[in-house]
Length: 442
Image 1: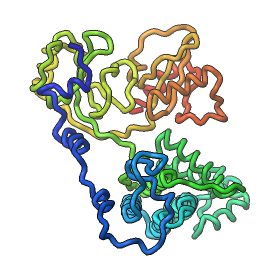
Image 2: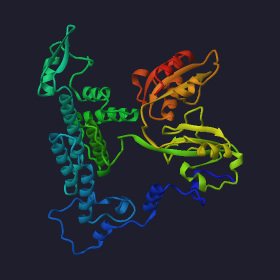
Image 3: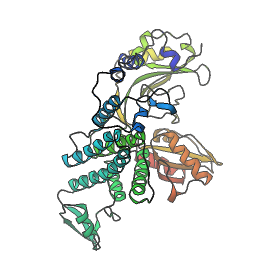
Image 4: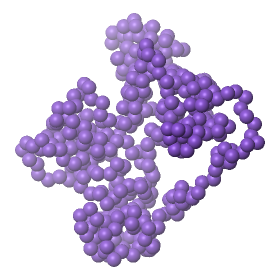
């Protein structure tokens, strides 16, 4: 019998953990329908202003009206839907009141798009303005004791009340310590926030670049534009998460942050044939019945529950989120003995799932699979013509795709917008092994 993760999870004795099963069950149950109830309630008071019919076709289930599935929302339902979205987008109390108040006005503009459709476009533009405001506020808080400036090699601290005031000082041959190109612009502030660790993640770095480009286009274009509600709400989610992260807070949307994952001990069985296998939570081991157990090669790993571990391998990186080997390889009997052994205390953990270091070997124009530092240090022997690339990326796929683009000449260093940060290009094995030893946690 060939089984994969989905087949295994439905077999007797291999049910999902209780919390996960409850979550899945809640998604499969017929949902409660407060919005549908409101749609059918003819006794509801009508809205005080006429609505723009274009705003009614963007329903919680997708596009409605003549161009989509189902009909448009009733005005009262649309108002409730937009209000709930705004409640989820409200900034947390960790963000200073001055910033929260300005973003609250943006949310009111967004909800008012129900009556004036152009307000969806205005809300997007204003969101980017408030993002810049938040960056300025965080910058001034960061340097509350004075901004360190360097002038002709001499360091001094100046107190400023606004970033504009700092710009005047910077124009007089002074430079921000550690950031000689800082000019107080949105691009400078985003770069500063990333270097200081307030913003992180390689895909988020691309999002920051795109946000700056979109904001500049919005501010300086000579053309008119109209944003649809889904466009605007995506902008609001990203901007709200970026602002919240400046003060170490999280948003419910979790579109870009906090980019951490919860991992639990998982059992992985590979085989008996290639790309065959099974996986389940370690706590389910006593209940698992597998008629091919003796033919498989078994491992215990720390992994997110949703990760596909059938394609996981101990010597290369193939999974979208970090996976740590705890035990294996071994037989089915070895696995049971290891679990029952004294001192066997494999615990769940939470790790950051971005800004991972990957090592790729290129030999004869072929790009090998991505590896971790530990996997590189375990290699023995090398080819005379092999060269290594080391990058920071969020996933092994992003890392390997970038190296493919570099090798084929389609990705140039100055114009690269891949979600990676290069560390080494074309290095020898001993160079990257030394780097891996110096950065064991990477």
